[in-house]
Amino acid sequence: MKKDGHTHTELCPHGSGDSTAEMIEKAIELGFSEYCITEHAPLPKRFASEFRGSIEGLETASLEWSQLDDYFKLCANLQKKYGDVINIKVGFEVDYLPGFEKEIKQFLDEYGAQTQENILSVHFMKGTDNGFWCVDYDTVEFADGFSNFLADPQNLYHRYLELIQQAVSANLGKYAPQRIGHMNLIKKYQDYFELPAKFDANNLELITGILNNIKRQKRELDFNTAGLYKPYCNEVYPGSQIIQMACEKKIPLVFGSDAHSIAEVGHGYHLTDFIETLDRK
Ligand code: ZN
Ligand code: FE
Image 1 (cartoon, rainbow, N blue to C red):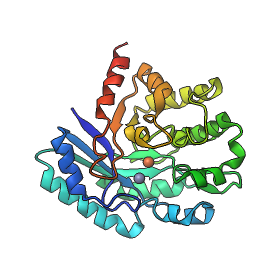
Image 2 (cartoon, rainbow, N blue to C red; image 1 turned 90 degrees about the vertical axis):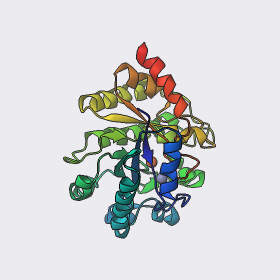
Image 3 (cartoon, rainbow, N blue to C red; image 1 turned 135 degrees about the vertical axis):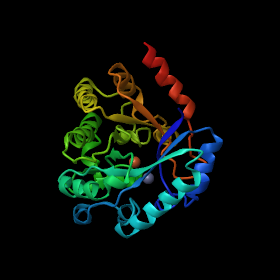
Image 4 (cartoon, rainbow, N blue to C red; image 1 turned 120 degrees about the vertical axis):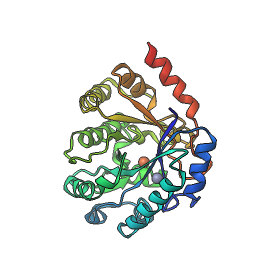
């Protein structure tokens, strides 16, 4: 089964605006039989007051609460239009934000029944000033927000991985997302900041704990090829070390192009061959 498990829509405020229908047509053309629409869920309303980064970044990070109806309508129409040809699953890429678990669970409790597959991702982390900053907006925000941690990049990594650990452990209720998004997003600007390619022993220990948890919960990992096409990342998320470890633990890695445009749909799918090689060992 050929599946794209992570895609965005024309409603995404930082997307290309490409028509979602045409994105699905591209997936059909490429021979995909399953397609997950996982738009960025609206952020908890209270979050803005704890955010210190670029306002534009915050405002374009996700759907607005007022767009939820349009989103579900768009997805339902697409399921109706293309449902005979491709299995379209609808859901969200939900942000994990420490301290906002109640709000996140509330959102999932309210809308989860209308979804089939969801992804839990960490895009925001507390920075030098203890306010939240965006991990993947741009290099300027990354440098501003995390300046104090850049001298010790393994510690920077550790801070991010701790959030992933919290995300996986959080009680998000019955509709807790089954898949963890781009688990090493903290490396998006690795080549710009000359961050280490490998996680050190201490981080690997933390990763082992996270993966054991994911395994126990029968959850999945996003095998996200978007990183490969980012100018300063040049690596598939979650990176070779985590991919290898996840394969050893037989944790499912689900391909996701993280497409925000027609051109990006399904890109890098052939790299899933690599997982199969590891799987067989
Ligand atoms: Zn996005
Ligand atoms: Fe994401």
